Image 1 (tube, rainbow, N blue to C red):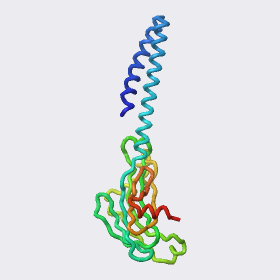
Image 2 (image 1 turned 90 degrees about the vertical axis):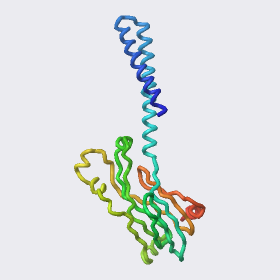
Image 3 (image 1 turned 135 degrees about the horizontal axis):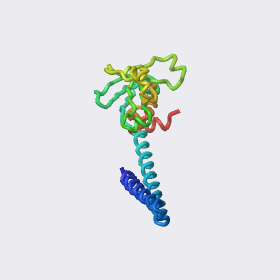
Length: 217
């Protein structure tokens, strides 16, 4: 908002002074008309520049906004076995037993074109699945795996709607795709997952989670 007032002020008065300058030039008042026209053009340029800076700032804020998507915590119960508590905003916490060395959270994303996003349409996401991962590929093949569905009945399924050709003609939709994050599990570790306009990101919430990330190979 800090750029709006300068943009309006310089844009309005710059345009007004430019018009009066042109009027004087038409009446052959070259000196005063030229000065006013030049002053008006400079003020107009300042107004346009302020508006562009404000628009750019608005774009940056909208496209980098982060929303908490989930908090997940772990307690080791056996080698390569953890009890996980997943807390999704607006839902009751859920408990899972996850096997492996790492956890992974999958989501489906629907992303709007930047202009629609700036206009207020944030990326839509739905957490889809929680799984356990083994660091070693052969263990991933040989050992038991943990897979849990997270999505409930979505009612109006925006994912299916996004694939409709009639929606595509509106040209407001940029993409729809799957996205995931994964990180190592550790005893007493807690992580927070954020949804951004471009996908999921994860951050540690305590020292146990930081230690797990710092030694992650």
